[in-house]
Structure formats: structure tokens, C-alpha cells
Length: 512
Ligand code: ME8
Image (cartoon, rainbow, N blue to C red; front, side, top):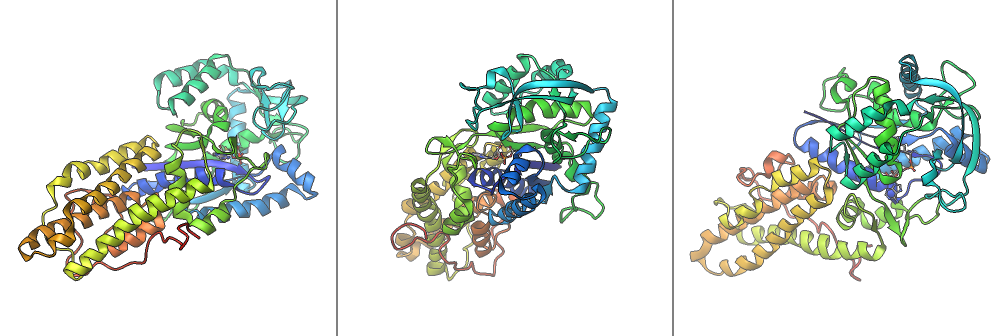
């Protein structure tokens, strides 16, 4: 089994912000979950460095585009490990191997008869690097995303004959109801297709900052074709991930992608242009495109060009990467828009991470030490918990297979709460007072450690640092196989370890 997940490649016209962090975290949860299943996984992220958005930003700063790209690509690259992201490669579209790959694929598209010369005239947003259709223009000829005035552009271009894929795209959507999800995004993409596709520019003549068109040195490729192809070209030159035999052909192993994770701003490119381009190049189509919503600050999409940006570097410094990962996937239903704020961060941190999960872990470990000298007692797991934990692993896997990351997290969290209730119901401190009830206490402690082990394994993709600490303390393995209700307990002989508080509270009650 192989699993290939990607994030969009982010523009280097400014620094990374929380919106970028969000997609990277989500894709990382999927990658880590599939690795836990023992699958071969490739997780790709990177930066989109060509085109007008970057050339214009560099111009405004009085630097060369390459210089701006180098500087900001470093910041995006540095963000990934700070987020706890386990990406297998970081692609930059200025990589010479990527550029050669783009030229090769697009020359093939031309040989296959899908490229012709023409003149384009239309309304253009330089921030989106996108020509707008008539129904995508806001009042006053403005971009609906960036609110800036659109420019009227007329250009001699090479065109990609998107319209010739009308029928095949409709067929794709008919045959594969899960090609794009959630359903609202599927409907949106399909209605765009049904409204009638028009051919789109494949190259730009006026712009120098891009991948040169091999058959006409006056042109560079339109940045979106260069960018989309990263998902394919990366596999041609990325290093082989650990655990796979040296010399593995990554394209043969991982193409086509299992999931492209994106936000709705770039739906049309991924749900319409991308499959058409792959058809034109005779390459296999991805299995799924998952479209999440926007993180909103004060009701507006967070975006560098709007200037209402929450800095993920600052957030991580204050709350830690695990807390950020948890908050974003817990508070904003994955697939929908949602507001984020420092106040709701702190609430989730205190009430859920510190009180519900952190305290549960501390209490269980402390009781095993107090009543059983740190050794997990031999016992049969309490059947009372069976219905709550029996199918949890399967339930979570099925949800993550559909990229329903918030629902999967909620399913796990209900069990965290169940374990807390179980502690209260069984009151081990009462059982410990009565030697005749030692067997009962063994069963309760054994079941609590077992339940905690299961939730920690399932939470590991969401909370990789803290759950690795907890699993280490419980002497449990991180593989999903161990998250079975009837799995063997930890190896006897070694006591479970005491650990520091997983989610410490500050004296004021808010994390510092
Ligand atoms: O569009 N909420 O790059 P980009 C949620 N280079 N997600 C957000 C977000 C927000 N407020 N803001 C950004 C590009 N994102 C192109 C992509 S792919 C072949 C080329 C995330 O830097 C989200 O994933 O504008 C969105 O789709 C992406 O960043 C846009 O990043």
C-alpha cells in the first residue's frame, strides 16, 4: 500500500502565516496516520516561486525575484519542522530538475495537440496570477479575493485547449463522486465545468520570471501550470524516504497522488485545470482533492495581502506545535471556514489538553505508581469499556481515509472523556482501601493504561511530540496495530515511567 499526500506549494511573495501552517499540519496528520498503518508514505510540500505575484513583490522591494524567493523559501522550509511536519521532501519550483520536468511534460502536451497560438484578452488579478471569468468579478472590476482593481490584459500567448476536455471532465465527475470533497466543493467545481470551459493561456510573453518555454524563447510558462506540475516532478528527483529501499522509483511507487489538500481559493486550478492537464499529458489522475475552508480573523480570510496575519512562529513559541495542531483541527471543522482567536486557543488548551488529556495521563501514571509500584497489573480489560474502545481504531482510520480530520479527532476525544468518567465511576482510591478488592483495582488500572495507550496511539498523528512522550512512558509502540482493544499490554518487567505534565498550565491559567 502506498499513500502520497501534498499541500499546495506556497507563494514566496511574503512570509508564511497561519493559513499555510494549517494545510501543512492537516496533510501531516494524514501522512503520519498512514505511516502508523505500515504503508509506504510520501508527503510533499514546498514553495511556488515563479510568476507575477513573486516578480511584483520583488520589484516593490527593489530586489531580484530569485533573492526574494531564496529568502522566503527558507522561512517556509523552516516552518515545516517547527510545526512538527514530517514532509519527505520540500520542492522549490526554481529547482532545475523541476523546471526541466515542467518543460518535458508541457512539450508532450503540445505534441499531443493541446497547445495553439492565440491572443488573450481579459480581466486579470496579478495577486492571484489569474484571469477572471465574467462571473468572478466583484463590483468596480475588483478581485473577489484581494479586493484590488483588475487590469485589462491583452497578450499573445500559447493556449492550453481546456475546452476540449469538457466531456471527459464531466465524465470524471460522474464516475468519481469522491474526486473532490467536501460535496459542496465537488458541486462548485462541477458547475464551473458545466457552465462551459474556455481555453486558457499556457504561457506569458511579458514576464521573464518563469520556466522558459522550450519551443519559443520569448515566453515563459504561466505560473499555474509550472506550479501544479510540482506534484509530479518532485517524485522524479526527491530522495528516497527512510524505510524504502535505495533506488526506489518514487514515481512508480507513489504516482498518482492519493490526496491533494488545498483551500477553496485554488479549487478551480486543482479540480478543473489539473485533471485536464494530466489527461493532456497522458498521466494518471489523483485519487482525491480535499478542499478545506479558510481560517478567519475578524471574519476575513487571513492573507498576507490583506495584512491581518497571525504569525505561526509566535503562536508556536507561546503554545507549542502540538497545541497549535490540536487547536486548528479541533476548533475549525476541517472542510469549513472558522474563526480563530487567542481566546479560543487558550480555552481549548486549558480545558481539553491540560485538564482532560494531560490530567488523565498524570493521574493514571500516578495511580499505577502509588498502588502498584509502577507496574501495570495483569488483568482482563474491563468489558464495560469494550463498546467504547472496541472499534475505535477502525472508526478513526475510516474517517481519516476521507480526510475527516476533525471528526476523527472528536471520536478519539470522546474516549479521552470516557476514560475520565471511568476514573470517577470506579474511584481507584476507594478500591485501594480494601485489600479484598485488589483484583478489581488491578482490572481498573490495567484498563485505564490500555485505554490511555489506545488514545495516545490514535492521537500521535495530531500530537506527535507529546504523545511520543506518553507512549514512551507507557512502554507502548506507536504503530496502529497496538491500538486494538484486545492488543497485548506492555511488556512485563519494566515499570511505566513518570513524566512531567504534558500540557503545563501557567500560574495565571494560560500557557506561556
Ligand atoms: O495559492 N485559511 O499559494 P498561497 C486556510 N502558490 N488556508 C489558507 C489560508 C487561510 N486563511 N491562507 C492560505 C498559492 N491558506 C499557490 C498554490 S499549488 C500548485 C499553488 C493555505 O501562498 C491554503 O492551503 O496563496 C491555500 O490554498 C494556500 O495556503 C494558498 O497559498
